[in-house]
Each structure stands twice: as structure tokens, then as C-alpha cells.
Length: 380
Image (tube, rainbow, N blue to C red):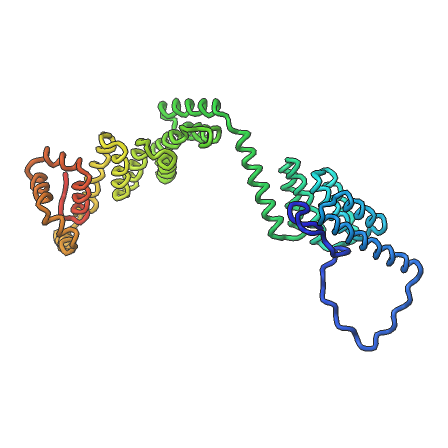
């Protein structure tokens, strides 16, 4: 029948819902066919006349003369009721005319008659898909989804599957939209804040999560704060990967919100991912260069990195080998021969106050980090 969203493609010219199959070669010395009875002749004429009406209907459909197409398909059905394509084609015309109830009625009749005739399952699936399309147009997405699923059990095909997925996505969006309520979102946020202050972190997570559902990004310019708050809860609960995910989402939603970097850096620190933490604190300091929490986090991370990579727990021999390997690195050689860096390193050993001032300069800080990782310099 007319395909696509109910009728965009030309109507079906396949009769009886049977699949097109190659004609087998004629057998040798076939007995002559029995002459048809009058009744059989009458049925054959009705079938032929019905097929002619269908073809006229198809031609009218292509010209978008829908009233004429309906009349021809109607006549075809009066003449012969053994071909469900007359019904599915007429359903496509109703669909184009936006008469979705009539579309559904014809599709249901086609399915019922198709089962009686044991018609090709593809034809039954087509009728069900067309019914689903009409239900989508009527806005009944749950019924459309159920109908598409039935069609797929008859015949699994890409078009119906795509329509099912689109309907499911639309229904999910519809349900999410119906759930949006900024007043309730703000209430949940306040409940979450109260639980967080009282140390009831699992309860706070539930409230912040509900606040997010009630106030998604498109209606809530402060959604990033909810992610930051929930990240803090996860940190307290020791659910570090979940917290890190939330901190990353917070930064993605609002890259200028420094608390996102503080949360992310803190989580990376406790996960002992010191390199990542240093990068995060550095990104935060680009947003707010004088933020004390970020500076403290960065310093704390450098000392931890120093302990983990600068030789803690190593034998003297291992430390020496590590330093020799580092000294062969051209980048390390360049840092160590840089007059400014030589002064900085002197200050580290003789003038701690000056050393702290140096750490505030991102370029010097980056070079110090490299020397710490290489085991050349030990801070703290």
C-alpha cells in the first residue's frame, strides 16, 4: 500500500498480500487445465475488475485526487474482499486527508481480514505500521508504540523500527516535559541543602537528583549548582567516580563557576590522580586567579605528587637511576639551565617565602611540577 508516513509512496500493486516469487519453469507434458465453472469465471472476473479499480485508485492517489481514490478503492472492496491491499491503500488515502480515525478503522479491518486469509505477514505488518502512524498523529504515543511493536513481531523492518524509536523518544520527552516544575525543583534543592548540612548525604543526593529532574537545563540556568552540590555529597559518601562525573557536568554547564573546578580537583586528589588534579586547579585559576581554595588545592597536590613520584619509598639506587633518566630529557635540561629557574631553585632551598611567591606564577609552577615528577626536586 502507499508507504512512508501513511501514504507518501505510490500505492501497492501487489494483490492478495502475497510475496512476488519467480515463476517456476513449465513442467513437461502438463495435463490440460480443467475448464472453469461459471462460478469460478464470475470470481475471476470480479477479481480482475477489482484489480482494475485498484489501479484507477492508485493513479488518482498519485495525482492527489483523494476523493476519487477513495471511490475506486471502495468499489474494489465491494467487488472482491480477498485482497487486503485495497484496505491498506484506502487507509493511506484517509491518512493523507488527515482522517486518522478512518485510517485506523481500515488498518484494523486489514489486519483482521489478513489473518483470516493467511495473507503475507509483510502486508499485515504494513497495516499495523500505518495504524501506528495514525496514532502518532492523534498524539496517542503509548498506543502507537504498542502497535509498532506488534508490527515488528509480524515483520521486522528498518522503517517500522525507526518509527518505534522516534515514538519512544517523543514519549520520553513528553513525560520529562510534563514533570518539569521549577517550584518543586527549588523545594527539592532546599531539602537537599538542609540534609547536606545535617550530614544526611544519601538523602541529600535523592533531593538534588529530584531537583535536577524537575528543573532540567533548558528551564534552569542554575542546574550546574545542583551538579556541584551532588558532587560534594558523593565525595562525602566516598562515591568518587560518581562525584567526578557530576563535577565534570557542572563545569560543562557553566565553565566560569569555580566551585566546579574545586570539586573536580578535590575528587581527583582523593583518587590519587594528581596530574589530572593539577590540570583542573590550573583551569580554575585561569577563571579566578586569586581563588584561595584553588591555590591551596594546587599546593597540596604538588606535595602529594612529590611524595608519590619524587622518591618516597625508593632506595637511593632507584632514586639515582630515576634522576639520571630525567637528566637525559632535553626539556628537563632546558629547565635546569634556565637562569630564572636556577634562582627559583635556590630560593626553594634558602628562602621559603620567595619560593611561595614563585608558586603563584603558572609558568614557573608548571616547570616545578615537571622537576618534581622527574624526582629532581622535592618540595615540602
